[in-house]
Image (cartoon, rainbow, N blue to C red; front, side):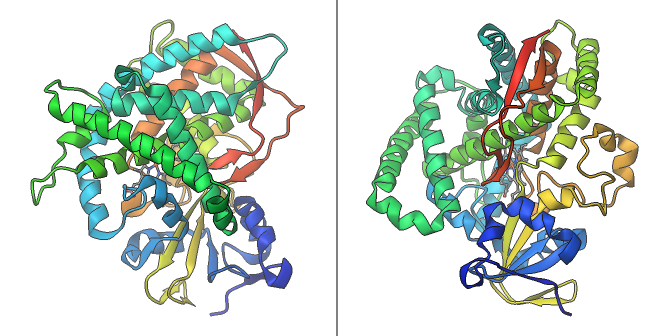
Length: 445
Ligand code: HEM
């Protein structure tokens, strides 16, 4: 079967214009090329995919024929062989060991840490508000979600080096993002010292985390954080636990996978709310009714239904993981189209979430779409911010809990209004970031 093919417009047919903003540009071609088309002029055969039947086939039915695409190799230099980057039997074993750390009963303990940090954060925010000055909200959300990630992983404040840990984690992440997004500049990074600096920082980080692991191994004290769970985890077949190196890789993986995604989702959702105060008012009413002046409890979360719908709709329009890349290990056939071994299946979640095939007025922010009856009526795999299949996000409940809690607390206490003098543009890096940040006027209520 012939597949519609988009031919790159750049020099020598290089599709540079499409990778400039791959999320939006591949989506914009839907009308002309459909939801499954080939892009010519990239390093490998490249297929833009946002058709649920093919997504199901690649991520579920024939997942064994797919590995994560080449971008993940760059991630590996910082994340090592953790859950996001590993493959095959090794990944399966690690996933089995890490899974219990994210069971519901564990999340209850983590929730209390999140609620305490969120309460402090709301107070700090109130104290630093200035009249007539807008706030860069994506930076704010990064800081609070990083605090939550460090605390839930390591109970970090006990170690007195939280700031150092945070600084290094962020710097390592930035370096990796540069490598993933500008592969042609990698040689330059060896010359200009960026790579050496990365190795130095990574060494300091390794020292820090290995010390934490050693202290934990020799102490008898029982803790409730994610590291404690990972330390206790044993493989069902061999009875062995994780090595120090493995613990390091999983810890940095969870930090990286966990905090930036939630921060982006919250920032974009606040941006959407800043233009639709009537939706913010409904969240506020729900928060006042469910937890009022108290700090929210884990049980309260199940009653914050409308807030949950808002978070879901925010991630529909701005899915933090905007795309998933896979490569087929052997020749395959996708909906009748033969695809050669080593092609890139670029699953564009951003485009899927905005496809007029499944969403009425797709550009409109309307949380009612996530009312239970509407969710039930929609075809499967038309909404997948956390991925699908065996590699689906392990932290999805953790993330939903964190975002629901923070959004309800923030909107209850503050009013957000868009600073229209500031440009808003998407930048699909590893996560879908606001290219110039998001500036909002924030007022205490
Ligand atoms: C809004 C927040 C989040 C979003 C949208 C998100 C999205 C995703 C997606 C789409 C994947 C699948 C990637 C693929 O198939 O290539 C994934 C994997 C993963 N996520 Fe999340 N994530 C979020 C938060 C979190 C949190 C809070 C954690 C941990 C605390 C986490 C840990 C992970 C890990 C470890 C994996 C790899 C799982 C595996 O392959 O076994 N994520 N995430």
